[in-house]
Length: 248
Ligand SMILES: NC(=O)c1ccc[n+]([C@@H]2O[C@H](COP(=O)([O-])OP(=O)(O)OC[C@H]3O[C@@H](n4cnc5c(N)ncnc54)[C@H](O)[C@@H]3O)[C@@H](O)[C@H]2O)c1
Image 1 (tube, rainbow, N blue to C red):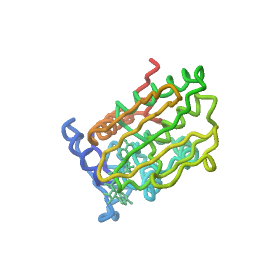
Image 2 (cartoon, helix red, strand yellow):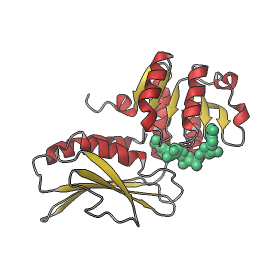
Image 3 (tube, rainbow, N blue to C red):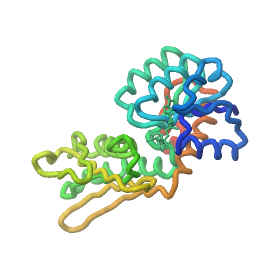
């Protein structure tokens, strides 16, 4: 399979290596130094594009892929408020897109179990819940896209919480800015850690912690290449849950 890499930073470079290991060919690499090469003609040399750039550039890159008719795997986070508009555009123009806030298999298992756990915890209302995420200091968005997906999984299944609020470490989370029906996402930015997410159910009696720790970025990159293989011959707008399909 021929792949275009839109974004050639930390993730783009690992995706390149994993794609080579899986016998794919990289036919285009775009970063901020060679944007002039991002043309319809160059994109059409690829079977699939993999987009890991920045929250400010992702929408333009998705549009370039739609214009070229090239299926796109989107890993960049921080654009999900535009989701319904992009979905409509994708379906209207008969293009293909698969996105994930996190492409790692382990995190997607975590998302699935998080939803089941939240539903179960409706029976035990004396536990309060919060989400904690730790990432490297260069991470541009806060909370992480992964933390938002975890929070949405809880909100969809736990009756006691209605929406989420984010507090960056250093800012105080007080009863004044967090209501009882709001889910706190606490974000920490520390040196160069790849990413930790913890769901904490706390009561006077005990604490239940459900935690995922990424040891490196390889899991995200492998998931993105698997998504490229999966989307290549499909049409439509998909999330990574469609690919993993844990309900089978
Ligand atoms: N979904 C996932 O599994 C997952 C995993 C890790 C990171 N991410 C997200 O992926 C994104 C990239 O992460 P990273 O760690 O590789 O960041 P990075 O800062 O290392 O790399 C970003 C790259 O984008 C390039 N770029 C800038 N403007 C561009 C443009 N217009 N077109 C194409 N490329 C452009 C930069 O030159 C750079 O190479 C972030 O949003 C991050 O949160 C997602």
